[in-house]
Image (cartoon, rainbow, N blue to C red; front, side):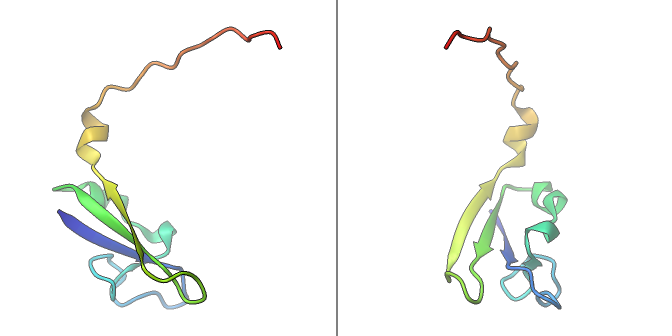
Length: 83
């Protein structure tokens, strides 16, 4: 499984900013390269804590193959119910 990292947004970012390590993490969630995560084997995204906040990591698993292959459910439309 591939691992990517994203850290809180900060001026100047982190290293190469390609998400491949903690030192080269993506600079905030807006910088996550979802295409890179979707390519190849399943990936996990580590959301890293930031200065002034909680430390540590939260791991998010993203498996695009499931989302691409799974049929989309048809939304149910129900009549409004009396209150």
